[in-house]
Image 1: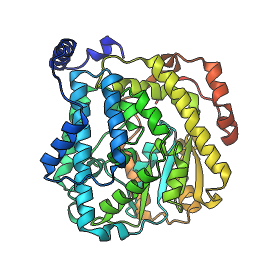
Image 2: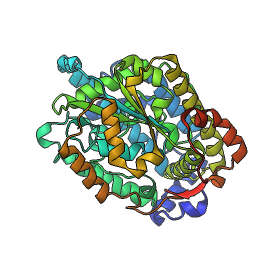
Image 3: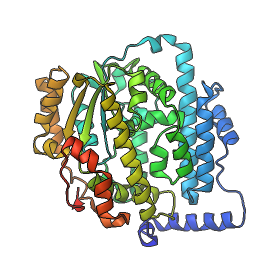
Length: 420
Protein backbone atom coordinates (compact mmCIF):
# COMPACT_ATOMS: atom_id res chain seq x y z
CA UNK A 1 0.00 0.00 0.00
CA UNK A 2 1.42 3.33 -0.97
CA UNK A 3 1.89 6.12 1.57
CA UNK A 4 -0.65 8.17 -0.41
CA UNK A 5 -3.33 5.56 0.19
CA UNK A 6 -2.49 5.41 3.88
CA UNK A 7 -2.87 9.18 4.03
CA UNK A 8 -6.58 8.87 3.36
CA UNK A 9 -6.96 7.83 6.97
CA UNK A 10 -8.08 10.35 9.61
CA UNK A 11 -5.24 12.76 10.37
CA UNK A 12 -5.33 11.96 14.07
CA UNK A 13 -4.76 8.30 13.31
CA UNK A 14 -1.85 9.07 10.99
CA UNK A 15 -0.27 11.22 13.73
CA UNK A 16 -0.77 8.50 16.35
CA UNK A 17 0.94 5.91 14.16
CA UNK A 18 3.88 8.26 13.55
CA UNK A 19 4.32 8.80 17.28
CA UNK A 20 4.10 5.06 17.82
CA UNK A 21 6.82 4.52 15.22
CA UNK A 22 9.11 7.02 16.92
CA UNK A 23 8.58 5.41 20.32
CA UNK A 24 9.28 1.97 18.92
CA UNK A 25 12.47 3.22 17.24
CA UNK A 26 13.59 4.50 20.64
CA UNK A 27 12.94 1.11 22.21
CA UNK A 28 10.16 2.41 24.45
CA UNK A 29 7.31 0.08 25.47
CA UNK A 30 4.32 -0.09 23.15
CA UNK A 31 1.19 -2.21 23.13
CA UNK A 32 2.30 -5.65 24.30
CA UNK A 33 1.84 -8.77 22.21
CA UNK A 34 3.37 -11.29 24.62
CA UNK A 35 1.57 -14.53 25.39
CA UNK A 36 1.77 -14.32 29.19
CA UNK A 37 0.17 -10.88 29.50
CA UNK A 38 -2.59 -11.78 27.04
CA UNK A 39 -3.49 -15.00 28.85
CA UNK A 40 -3.42 -13.25 32.21
CA UNK A 41 -5.59 -10.36 31.03
CA UNK A 42 -8.13 -12.72 29.44
CA UNK A 43 -8.43 -14.61 32.72
CA UNK A 44 -8.76 -11.40 34.70
CA UNK A 45 -11.46 -10.04 32.39
CA UNK A 46 -13.54 -13.22 32.48
CA UNK A 47 -12.71 -14.52 36.00
CA UNK A 48 -11.99 -17.87 34.32
CA UNK A 49 -8.74 -19.78 33.92
CA UNK A 50 -9.46 -22.98 31.99
CA UNK A 51 -8.47 -22.50 28.34
CA UNK A 52 -9.23 -26.13 27.53
CA UNK A 53 -7.00 -28.27 25.35
CA UNK A 54 -3.50 -26.83 25.09
CA UNK A 55 -3.27 -27.39 21.34
CA UNK A 56 -3.93 -23.69 20.70
CA UNK A 57 -0.79 -22.59 22.56
CA UNK A 58 1.82 -23.33 19.88
CA UNK A 59 -0.04 -21.63 17.00
CA UNK A 60 -0.72 -18.68 19.31
CA UNK A 61 2.99 -18.37 20.16
CA UNK A 62 3.96 -18.55 16.50
CA UNK A 63 1.34 -15.98 15.55
CA UNK A 64 2.52 -13.52 18.21
CA UNK A 65 6.15 -14.00 17.18
CA UNK A 66 5.31 -13.36 13.53
CA UNK A 67 3.28 -10.28 14.42
CA UNK A 68 6.32 -8.93 16.26
CA UNK A 69 8.97 -9.90 13.72
CA UNK A 70 7.27 -9.84 10.31
CA UNK A 71 4.04 -7.84 10.25
CA UNK A 72 5.61 -4.37 10.68
CA UNK A 73 2.59 -3.19 12.63
CA UNK A 74 1.80 0.44 13.28
CA UNK A 75 0.69 1.48 16.75
CA UNK A 76 -2.91 1.06 15.62
CA UNK A 77 -1.97 -2.30 14.15
CA UNK A 78 -0.59 -3.47 17.46
CA UNK A 79 -3.74 -2.33 19.20
CA UNK A 80 -5.90 -4.17 16.66
CA UNK A 81 -3.83 -7.36 16.94
CA UNK A 82 -3.83 -7.32 20.74
CA UNK A 83 -7.56 -6.65 20.95
CA UNK A 84 -8.32 -9.43 18.47
CA UNK A 85 -6.20 -11.99 20.31
CA UNK A 86 -7.62 -10.94 23.67
CA UNK A 87 -11.19 -11.20 22.38
CA UNK A 88 -10.52 -14.69 21.03
CA UNK A 89 -8.96 -15.83 24.31
CA UNK A 90 -11.89 -14.47 26.31
CA UNK A 91 -14.35 -16.16 23.94
CA UNK A 92 -12.44 -19.39 24.34
CA UNK A 93 -12.61 -19.21 28.13
CA UNK A 94 -16.37 -18.59 28.08
CA UNK A 95 -17.09 -21.36 25.56
CA UNK A 96 -14.99 -23.91 27.47
CA UNK A 97 -16.70 -22.94 30.72
CA UNK A 98 -20.17 -23.29 29.20
CA UNK A 99 -19.36 -26.68 27.66
CA UNK A 100 -18.03 -27.93 31.00
CA UNK A 101 -21.19 -26.86 32.80
CA UNK A 102 -23.47 -28.19 30.08
CA UNK A 103 -21.89 -31.32 28.58
CA UNK A 104 -25.17 -32.11 26.83
CA UNK A 105 -24.30 -29.41 24.28
CA UNK A 106 -21.73 -31.70 22.68
CA UNK A 107 -24.38 -34.37 22.21
CA UNK A 108 -26.32 -32.20 19.74
CA UNK A 109 -26.22 -33.77 16.28
CA UNK A 110 -24.92 -31.86 13.27
CA UNK A 111 -26.16 -33.71 10.24
CA UNK A 112 -25.22 -33.15 6.61
CA UNK A 113 -24.00 -29.57 6.91
CA UNK A 114 -23.45 -27.65 3.68
CA UNK A 115 -19.98 -26.16 3.18
CA UNK A 116 -19.38 -23.56 0.47
CA UNK A 117 -15.80 -24.12 -0.68
CA UNK A 118 -14.01 -22.10 -3.31
CA UNK A 119 -11.34 -19.55 -4.04
CA UNK A 120 -11.92 -16.05 -2.64
CA UNK A 121 -13.82 -13.73 -4.99
CA UNK A 122 -15.80 -16.58 -6.62
CA UNK A 123 -19.28 -15.80 -5.32
CA UNK A 124 -19.00 -17.66 -2.02
CA UNK A 125 -20.16 -14.65 -0.01
CA UNK A 126 -23.32 -13.81 -1.95
CA UNK A 127 -24.23 -17.50 -2.15
CA UNK A 128 -23.84 -17.79 1.62
CA UNK A 129 -25.94 -14.67 2.15
CA UNK A 130 -28.71 -15.98 -0.11
CA UNK A 131 -28.79 -19.40 1.54
CA UNK A 132 -29.02 -17.64 4.90
CA UNK A 133 -32.41 -16.28 3.81
CA UNK A 134 -33.90 -19.77 4.02
CA UNK A 135 -35.43 -20.17 7.52
CA UNK A 136 -34.41 -23.83 7.44
CA UNK A 137 -30.74 -22.85 7.24
CA UNK A 138 -28.54 -21.77 10.15
CA UNK A 139 -25.42 -19.70 9.52
CA UNK A 140 -22.96 -18.12 11.98
CA UNK A 141 -23.81 -14.42 11.95
CA UNK A 142 -20.97 -11.92 12.35
CA UNK A 143 -22.19 -10.72 15.75
CA UNK A 144 -22.35 -14.19 17.32
CA UNK A 145 -19.06 -15.27 15.75
CA UNK A 146 -17.28 -12.21 17.20
CA UNK A 147 -18.97 -12.38 20.61
CA UNK A 148 -20.40 -15.88 21.12
CA UNK A 149 -20.93 -15.52 24.87
CA UNK A 150 -23.51 -15.75 26.25
CA UNK A 151 -24.91 -18.39 23.87
CA UNK A 152 -27.37 -16.81 21.42
CA UNK A 153 -31.06 -17.47 22.04
CA UNK A 154 -33.87 -17.80 19.54
CA UNK A 155 -36.12 -15.26 21.28
CA UNK A 156 -33.53 -12.45 21.13
CA UNK A 157 -31.63 -13.49 18.00
CA UNK A 158 -32.75 -10.44 16.00
CA UNK A 159 -32.47 -7.95 18.87
CA UNK A 160 -29.40 -9.04 20.84
CA UNK A 161 -27.40 -5.99 22.02
CA UNK A 162 -24.24 -7.49 20.52
CA UNK A 163 -25.66 -6.67 17.09
CA UNK A 164 -25.34 -2.95 17.75
CA UNK A 165 -21.90 -3.48 19.29
CA UNK A 166 -20.60 -5.21 16.15
CA UNK A 167 -22.24 -2.66 13.83
CA UNK A 168 -20.36 0.06 15.69
CA UNK A 169 -17.14 -1.90 15.23
CA UNK A 170 -17.72 -2.16 11.47
CA UNK A 171 -18.41 1.57 11.28
CA UNK A 172 -14.98 2.13 12.80
CA UNK A 173 -13.40 -0.21 10.25
CA UNK A 174 -15.12 1.74 7.49
CA UNK A 175 -13.59 5.00 8.72
CA UNK A 176 -10.10 3.54 9.01
CA UNK A 177 -10.24 1.56 5.78
CA UNK A 178 -12.44 3.45 3.29
CA UNK A 179 -13.21 1.41 0.23
CA UNK A 180 -13.41 -1.99 1.89
CA UNK A 181 -17.20 -2.16 1.61
CA UNK A 182 -16.80 -1.93 -2.15
CA UNK A 183 -14.90 -5.22 -2.02
CA UNK A 184 -16.73 -7.07 0.76
CA UNK A 185 -19.98 -6.35 2.58
CA UNK A 186 -19.79 -5.92 6.35
CA UNK A 187 -22.66 -6.23 8.78
CA UNK A 188 -23.41 -7.69 12.19
CA UNK A 189 -26.34 -9.64 10.74
CA UNK A 190 -24.48 -10.99 7.72
CA UNK A 191 -23.10 -14.56 7.65
CA UNK A 192 -19.54 -14.99 8.86
CA UNK A 193 -16.89 -17.37 7.54
CA UNK A 194 -15.67 -20.46 9.34
CA UNK A 195 -12.27 -18.81 9.85
CA UNK A 196 -13.88 -16.69 12.58
CA UNK A 197 -14.60 -19.87 14.53
CA UNK A 198 -11.29 -21.56 13.72
CA UNK A 199 -9.50 -18.44 14.98
CA UNK A 200 -10.31 -19.59 18.53
CA UNK A 201 -7.70 -22.30 17.91
CA UNK A 202 -5.35 -19.71 16.35
CA UNK A 203 -4.97 -21.97 13.32
CA UNK A 204 -6.48 -20.24 10.32
CA UNK A 205 -5.50 -18.43 7.13
CA UNK A 206 -7.39 -15.40 8.48
CA UNK A 207 -4.34 -13.97 10.23
CA UNK A 208 -2.07 -14.12 7.17
CA UNK A 209 -4.82 -12.44 5.16
CA UNK A 210 -5.01 -9.36 7.38
CA UNK A 211 -1.35 -9.32 8.51
CA UNK A 212 1.94 -10.30 6.90
CA UNK A 213 2.85 -13.37 9.00
CA UNK A 214 4.44 -15.85 6.54
CA UNK A 215 6.33 -17.97 9.09
CA UNK A 216 3.13 -18.49 11.08
CA UNK A 217 1.16 -19.43 7.97
CA UNK A 218 3.85 -21.86 6.82
CA UNK A 219 3.65 -23.59 10.19
CA UNK A 220 -0.17 -23.75 10.10
CA UNK A 221 0.06 -25.25 6.61
CA UNK A 222 1.98 -28.17 8.14
CA UNK A 223 -0.54 -28.79 10.95
CA UNK A 224 -3.00 -31.61 11.30
CA UNK A 225 -6.18 -29.53 11.38
CA UNK A 226 -8.54 -32.29 12.47
CA UNK A 227 -8.51 -31.00 16.08
CA UNK A 228 -9.30 -27.52 14.76
CA UNK A 229 -12.33 -28.86 12.88
CA UNK A 230 -13.38 -30.77 16.00
CA UNK A 231 -13.34 -27.43 17.83
CA UNK A 232 -15.27 -25.90 14.92
CA UNK A 233 -17.95 -28.56 15.38
CA UNK A 234 -18.20 -27.94 19.13
CA UNK A 235 -18.66 -24.24 18.47
CA UNK A 236 -21.53 -24.95 16.08
CA UNK A 237 -23.14 -27.13 18.74
CA UNK A 238 -22.67 -24.32 21.24
CA UNK A 239 -24.19 -21.67 18.93
CA UNK A 240 -27.16 -23.90 18.09
CA UNK A 241 -27.82 -24.93 21.72
CA UNK A 242 -30.52 -22.32 22.30
CA UNK A 243 -30.94 -21.23 18.69
CA UNK A 244 -31.27 -24.36 16.55
CA UNK A 245 -32.22 -24.80 12.90
CA UNK A 246 -32.69 -27.67 10.50
CA UNK A 247 -29.20 -27.52 8.96
CA UNK A 248 -25.97 -25.54 9.02
CA UNK A 249 -24.69 -23.71 5.94
CA UNK A 250 -21.04 -22.67 6.25
CA UNK A 251 -18.32 -21.23 4.06
CA UNK A 252 -14.67 -20.36 3.80
CA UNK A 253 -11.97 -20.51 1.13
CA UNK A 254 -9.73 -22.08 3.80
CA UNK A 255 -11.52 -25.41 3.32
CA UNK A 256 -9.83 -25.75 -0.08
CA UNK A 257 -6.53 -26.44 1.65
CA UNK A 258 -7.97 -28.70 4.35
CA UNK A 259 -10.89 -30.55 2.80
CA UNK A 260 -9.52 -33.87 4.04
CA UNK A 261 -9.52 -32.65 7.66
CA UNK A 262 -13.02 -31.21 7.22
CA UNK A 263 -14.34 -34.56 5.96
CA UNK A 264 -12.67 -36.40 8.84
CA UNK A 265 -14.92 -34.47 11.26
CA UNK A 266 -17.91 -33.98 8.95
CA UNK A 267 -17.96 -37.16 6.82
CA UNK A 268 -21.55 -36.48 5.69
CA UNK A 269 -20.83 -32.87 4.67
CA UNK A 270 -22.28 -31.59 1.41
CA UNK A 271 -19.87 -29.46 -0.57
CA UNK A 272 -20.60 -26.63 -2.98
CA UNK A 273 -17.35 -25.80 -4.77
CA UNK A 274 -17.42 -22.45 -6.56
CA UNK A 275 -15.32 -21.84 -9.67
CA UNK A 276 -13.90 -18.85 -11.52
CA UNK A 277 -10.81 -18.00 -13.56
CA UNK A 278 -8.06 -18.17 -10.86
CA UNK A 279 -5.98 -15.48 -12.56
CA UNK A 280 -8.91 -13.07 -12.31
CA UNK A 281 -9.36 -14.20 -8.71
CA UNK A 282 -5.70 -13.47 -7.99
CA UNK A 283 -5.98 -9.94 -9.38
CA UNK A 284 -9.02 -9.19 -7.20
CA UNK A 285 -7.55 -10.89 -4.13
CA UNK A 286 -4.27 -8.95 -4.32
CA UNK A 287 -6.26 -5.74 -4.29
CA UNK A 288 -8.31 -6.91 -1.30
CA UNK A 289 -5.35 -8.10 0.79
CA UNK A 290 -3.38 -4.95 0.01
CA UNK A 291 -6.20 -2.88 1.44
CA UNK A 292 -6.85 -5.20 4.39
CA UNK A 293 -3.23 -5.17 5.56
CA UNK A 294 -3.08 -1.39 5.28
CA UNK A 295 -5.32 -1.11 8.34
CA UNK A 296 -2.52 -2.36 10.59
CA UNK A 297 0.68 -1.61 8.67
CA UNK A 298 2.14 1.03 6.39
CA UNK A 299 4.64 -1.42 4.86
CA UNK A 300 2.57 -3.23 2.24
CA UNK A 301 4.11 -4.82 -0.86
CA UNK A 302 1.48 -5.83 -3.46
CA UNK A 303 4.13 -7.67 -5.50
CA UNK A 304 5.06 -9.84 -2.53
CA UNK A 305 1.36 -10.45 -1.87
CA UNK A 306 0.90 -11.54 -5.48
CA UNK A 307 3.82 -13.96 -5.40
CA UNK A 308 2.78 -15.43 -2.06
CA UNK A 309 -0.91 -15.87 -2.82
CA UNK A 310 -0.45 -17.16 -6.36
CA UNK A 311 1.36 -20.22 -5.04
CA UNK A 312 -0.98 -20.44 -2.06
CA UNK A 313 -4.10 -20.52 -4.27
CA UNK A 314 -2.51 -23.12 -6.53
CA UNK A 315 -1.74 -25.29 -3.50
CA UNK A 316 -5.33 -25.03 -2.27
CA UNK A 317 -6.79 -26.02 -5.62
CA UNK A 318 -4.35 -28.90 -5.94
CA UNK A 319 -5.21 -30.17 -2.45
CA UNK A 320 -8.94 -30.11 -3.17
CA UNK A 321 -8.53 -31.84 -6.53
CA UNK A 322 -6.53 -34.59 -4.81
CA UNK A 323 -9.24 -35.10 -2.18
CA UNK A 324 -11.92 -35.22 -4.84
CA UNK A 325 -9.92 -37.70 -6.94
CA UNK A 326 -9.39 -39.91 -3.88
CA UNK A 327 -13.06 -40.79 -3.56
CA UNK A 328 -13.50 -39.31 -0.08
CA UNK A 329 -16.44 -37.33 -1.49
CA UNK A 330 -19.33 -39.19 -3.02
CA UNK A 331 -20.83 -37.79 -6.21
CA UNK A 332 -24.03 -36.98 -4.31
CA UNK A 333 -22.04 -34.93 -1.77
CA UNK A 334 -20.62 -32.28 -4.10
CA UNK A 335 -21.97 -29.63 -6.46
CA UNK A 336 -19.79 -27.53 -8.76
CA UNK A 337 -20.96 -23.93 -9.23
CA UNK A 338 -19.45 -21.69 -11.89
CA UNK A 339 -19.70 -18.02 -10.96
CA UNK A 340 -20.54 -17.01 -14.53
CA UNK A 341 -23.61 -19.30 -14.53
CA UNK A 342 -24.63 -18.23 -11.03
CA UNK A 343 -24.66 -14.54 -11.96
CA UNK A 344 -26.98 -15.24 -14.90
CA UNK A 345 -29.65 -16.80 -12.68
CA UNK A 346 -28.92 -16.88 -8.95
CA UNK A 347 -32.20 -18.47 -7.87
CA UNK A 348 -32.02 -21.03 -10.67
CA UNK A 349 -28.57 -22.04 -9.45
CA UNK A 350 -29.83 -22.37 -5.87
CA UNK A 351 -32.65 -24.60 -7.10
CA UNK A 352 -30.02 -26.81 -8.74
CA UNK A 353 -28.05 -26.98 -5.48
CA UNK A 354 -31.18 -27.92 -3.53
CA UNK A 355 -32.06 -30.58 -6.08
CA UNK A 356 -28.55 -32.04 -5.90
CA UNK A 357 -28.80 -32.38 -2.12
CA UNK A 358 -32.48 -33.45 -2.12
CA UNK A 359 -33.65 -30.35 -0.26
CA UNK A 360 -36.90 -28.43 -0.64
CA UNK A 361 -36.71 -24.74 -1.54
CA UNK A 362 -39.81 -23.32 0.07
CA UNK A 363 -41.80 -20.44 -1.42
CA UNK A 364 -40.93 -18.34 1.64
CA UNK A 365 -37.21 -19.00 1.22
CA UNK A 366 -37.27 -18.13 -2.48
CA UNK A 367 -39.24 -14.93 -1.82
CA UNK A 368 -36.74 -13.87 0.82
CA UNK A 369 -33.82 -14.65 -1.48
CA UNK A 370 -35.29 -12.58 -4.30
CA UNK A 371 -35.96 -9.71 -1.93
CA UNK A 372 -32.37 -9.87 -0.69
CA UNK A 373 -31.00 -9.78 -4.23
CA UNK A 374 -33.13 -6.76 -5.09
CA UNK A 375 -31.97 -4.88 -1.99
CA UNK A 376 -28.29 -5.78 -2.23
CA UNK A 377 -26.91 -5.31 -5.75
CA UNK A 378 -23.21 -6.06 -6.18
CA UNK A 379 -22.33 -2.37 -6.55
CA UNK A 380 -24.45 -1.19 -3.61
CA UNK A 381 -21.39 0.38 -1.94
CA UNK A 382 -19.58 1.23 -5.18
CA UNK A 383 -17.54 -0.78 -7.64
CA UNK A 384 -14.30 -2.60 -6.84
CA UNK A 385 -11.78 -1.81 -9.58
CA UNK A 386 -8.56 -3.78 -9.83
CA UNK A 387 -5.93 -4.92 -12.27
CA UNK A 388 -3.65 -7.95 -12.55
CA UNK A 389 -0.67 -5.62 -12.99
CA UNK A 390 -0.86 -4.76 -9.26
CA UNK A 391 0.37 -8.27 -8.45
CA UNK A 392 3.61 -7.91 -10.43
CA UNK A 393 3.16 -11.45 -11.77
CA UNK A 394 3.78 -12.78 -15.26
CA UNK A 395 0.44 -13.51 -16.91
CA UNK A 396 1.71 -16.37 -19.07
CA UNK A 397 3.33 -18.09 -16.10
CA UNK A 398 0.14 -17.77 -14.04
CA UNK A 399 -1.98 -19.16 -16.87
CA UNK A 400 0.35 -22.18 -16.93
CA UNK A 401 0.21 -22.54 -13.13
CA UNK A 402 -3.58 -22.87 -13.11
CA UNK A 403 -4.05 -24.67 -16.44
CA UNK A 404 -4.78 -28.09 -14.93
CA UNK A 405 -7.49 -26.67 -12.68
CA UNK A 406 -9.12 -24.70 -15.49
CA UNK A 407 -9.08 -27.73 -17.75
CA UNK A 408 -10.43 -30.06 -15.04
CA UNK A 409 -13.49 -27.88 -14.40
CA UNK A 410 -13.92 -26.24 -17.80
CA UNK A 411 -13.20 -22.70 -16.63
CA UNK A 412 -12.79 -20.02 -19.28
CA UNK A 413 -10.15 -17.31 -18.89
CA UNK A 414 -11.42 -13.80 -18.14
CA UNK A 415 -9.99 -10.29 -18.64
CA UNK A 416 -7.43 -9.51 -15.95
CA UNK A 417 -8.39 -5.88 -15.37
CA UNK A 418 -11.96 -5.48 -14.29
CA UNK A 419 -14.66 -4.23 -11.98
CA UNK A 420 -16.50 -6.42 -9.47
